[in-house]
Image (cartoon, rainbow, N blue to C red):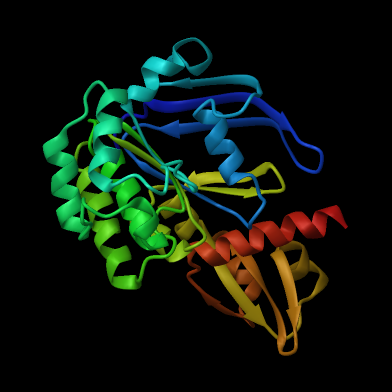
Length: 287
């Protein structure tokens, strides 16, 4: 494991809406890794990303590579590649004009790189933005994000709307980016299988709170998914996010507790199952 350097530091982040809030969030995003944020719709993933980008007002402190976004935000954004929905491009703009516009905004814009990615993604630069499907809009956003020498990529659902083969191409592209150990990717997704493939760290959010942040491999090594017919009171206390169904109970257990569950079937969980049971534990605790 490389020495840990913080790419994004979030301290006491609070954003209050009428029916939702982020309250006193603390989060460190390590440089040189892929951090995936997972959670149900409305958990706060997009709000968190917009706060990092200073797209919304908030209380607290956010710094990127040691520089305050409140003080140096305009300069820092030169080195951030962004994919958000909606992307903000006017529907009647042609793709080549999107590149020209972004070339005026980003100091390190590289037109040749932009055109290379348009060709890679099969985007006709003569088309209007409004003529692109949702999946092609995502590809356009990625082409732009990758064309101005960004060090940090903030990607909100970057593979949404893409078919499995194209998703795999995008994930391979992310893997290539991360060959440069100075690059950092922060992405949110509801396609948790993507994180099984590329994420180094996992952040689970629910109702504006961070339930857990951990290295993916550590999570997968420390927990097991346990399924059985009935749970004793001692077992129930150890089952994280215990769920009762027609055929018995299930939940996560610490691997160290496996001897207590010899009468259960245990298996290695995936990211989606870890997210599910951590959120279910939070719901059970709130009851």
